[in-house]
Image (cartoon, rainbow, N blue to C red; front, side, top):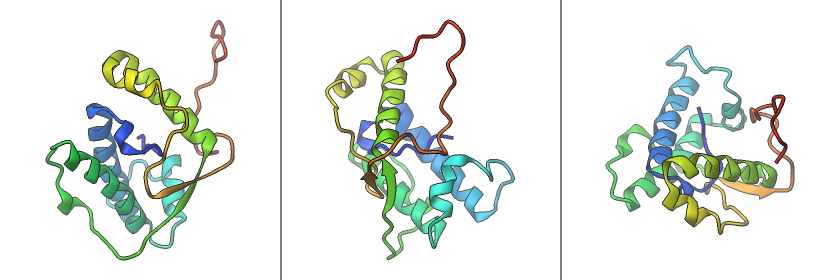
Length: 152
């Protein structure tokens, strides 16, 4: 499951669709409607909100808005709009990590979008997040370097 902290405009078609679907799965997890992924680390930031589902719906509304701008047919009835507005911190280190992670994916699956992202120096987050200084988030699963791999 990848619930990108990055603004959804950075995502390619595959990434945007996957984020929507995984966000809907996360919603079911938070509602207690599935047994899998209950302890998924990326859910931590939503679980800590007063109304986790409303916070996740706010996150997903930005995904929906991006899909609508692109002419996709995501179903808005799958999320609800509530009056509460959440603002969740995300570290700049997390955003830089996710941008590098996304670029690595796009080199292979969408070179044109990758070329557009090369110029991004200071990534912006999904509108539910605000940026704070810091390292990669503690909940992020960063792959460990194996033998023979170079550090970035």
